Image 1: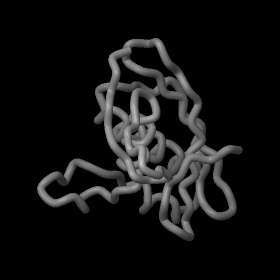
Image 2: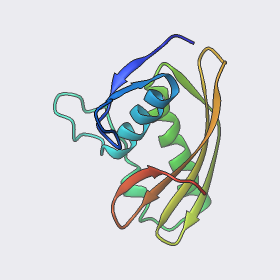
Image 3: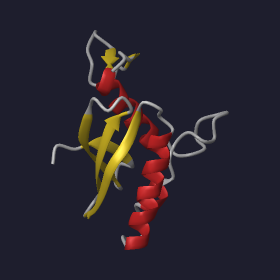
Image 4: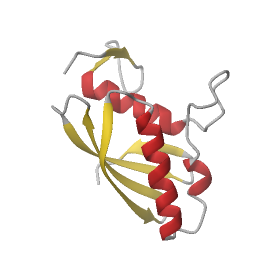
Length: 126
């Protein structure tokens, strides 16, 4: 895999460099925390997931969530989705997302929790 280098101040002190899969995960989380249309001049960036987490959790809502996550991930040319599982929770939605790099060298199961109280997505250690 090529070395991707980026910068993040989230949970960092002094060393702000983020590389490879950690950078991909940070970029994915950033994209999932932006509401679609919020970024000036780039209306395609972001997600409509935040409108779906308050809907009754039905198979149709799960399908819409799956399509939206696939759309957001497809905007990043470095990764692809292998599997998505959605689990409604009391305070939001837990998404188990298996992503792999396009080179096919790295695959990882990410647990994302979309919290409907804070309106933030975060990686979960469940």
